[in-house]
Length: 425
Ligand code: ADP
Image 1 (cartoon, rainbow, N blue to C red):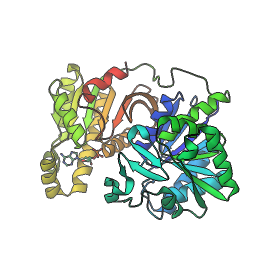
Image 2: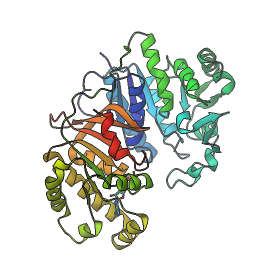
Image 3: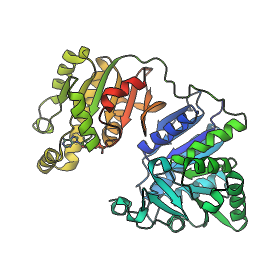
Image 4: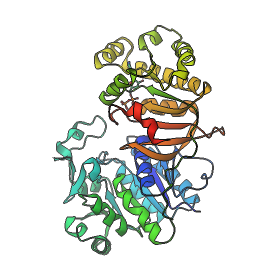
């Protein structure tokens, strides 16, 4: 069966978030890391190509997104999706606008929408203004973001500054009227010469209506929220079967381990809770800095303890400890050293028979995925919002049995490391 939805995500965890959303709505989905060179693996309704283009120079982001699109076009997708952050992270130079405009041109699309709303995660849009919880975007913490400070909550204005075409608004008066009114508004905007519309959305019901109105757009752009309405369009056209098993990953084998490289508050608590029950090994950055063979020590410890249940190997430390090592070594060097060691330890753990792995930390996950030569992730059941179990697809191996949960540092409750296993059995 042909791929129905081809998606380009501007960062890795954003890609996983979108892929998880599609799986929940019944589409079998794979996330690929970077633009592949091989044809698509079989049997997926949706493919998400995760780039790392959110904060690249606009020209690079455009070039990479276009390469991703060209590859997706070769797979014969019916519709395309550009996923960015639900806080519309961008600057006046881009990258959301320039990437969208380029993709439209390549698809010969005359009109698209931009809707980062994700009401379940408290991102809503009203009269074109983006709210984060109860605050306007421009008054939220995003105004101080180091790379993409968002100082204007009016998305019509924000997007207009990034594109050549005209940006209009489909405001709540249309959205609350449902799909046919929204559809009519899109048609009217196009007649008036608009190429883009920001779309208001306050609830999941709105996202479903907007999704239905997007059935015939070749390109849809937004956060992951708007994706929940799209699978139904394919179902109505008889292209997507209703299935309960979009999130099934097949047999799960192997021992269990957690690698924690995040120092975020949620992970600190998860480490503390897991240590009460499970064998745990601390990867000490000072020992790494002193040139000790911490990787070999950790793996020797792991082989002795591996039979005792899920193992925890962590570098997670309190802020004052992290600060003191950063002062000694430099923040970048400390991060790199720890990531490298944790990635090597993970390689060793897999040789020891680990087949079920949780990795905590965005950068840490990136380092592990790279070291293991993983080229894709088949998306499975959700453990916590934004964190699904996945099955690894490898660049150069037929290892079919590694399941992974890659957790952003701040995601998940205190019992995450203890309870995540229950979701994959
Ligand atoms: P998060 O998702 O919480 O931001 P990341 O993995 O993205 O987690 O980032 C955490 C960074 O901190 C990584 O580069 C990791 O190697 C580094 N790190 C982890 N533990 C320590 C430590 N004890 N001292 C200094 N740096 C550390």
